[in-house]
Image 1 (cartoon, rainbow, N blue to C red):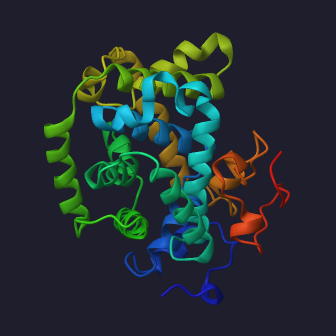
Image 2 (cartoon, helix red, strand yellow):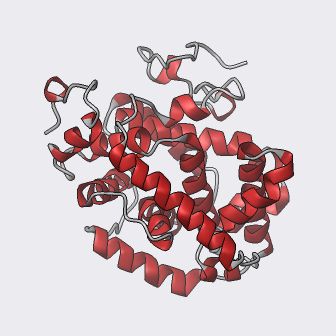
Length: 311
């Protein structure tokens, strides 16, 4: 079991990788997921790309898309970036503190309250967890890379399974392979085009390009984002397949990045809450969705973020 007192010296170049190697992916899934998703591969542009594609994947299920789109009046359509950042901060709270911690439980409980307002079925929530579990594996594989260790892949499954349990989900598969098989069947049975799903996916892709690329390169940003999706998903959403050249460039960029992460020193401690919690004054209070660390985790301190109600 993870013991903070036994963690490797963070001044060591491979401190995060060495710590992961010493941990158990089942027992220590929370710590490994933090070190993998937030520290090792926590570059904000990459985290946002994985989230964007995972969300687009969910929009290929019309019943999920209907809940999210809500006739074009939902937050994801009206204030796309704000909605994205709120969700990324929730995930950051889960990963930085662990789903079993008081902080993680408070964030999950608030998310449950939000979801209770909508007719979300158990299978829809399971598919959402599946997209979060597998995009970090599927996207690199699509681009010809395999940057995660087996321990990181297994821990990610157990992490999101733990989140699902605290969200009171049922019938969750009991292994990574079983969850993958479940997802494949679910997609075959439920993927279909819907106007709302296509609209949400386009809004997500457009916002990603606008956030990370200057205006004159946003078209390129959209193309690169589409290159992170397999053709079947693009076809279901009626999104244009990227050119072969674009896919090749995207794959080259990704393989270079992942290769560099294997030889460069591990980054210092960082998390999604710090990366995505400040732009709208949420940081990470998210007053408009009712989750405030000063109330739900009074001892919390986030670097660069005041503890107090968001304005």
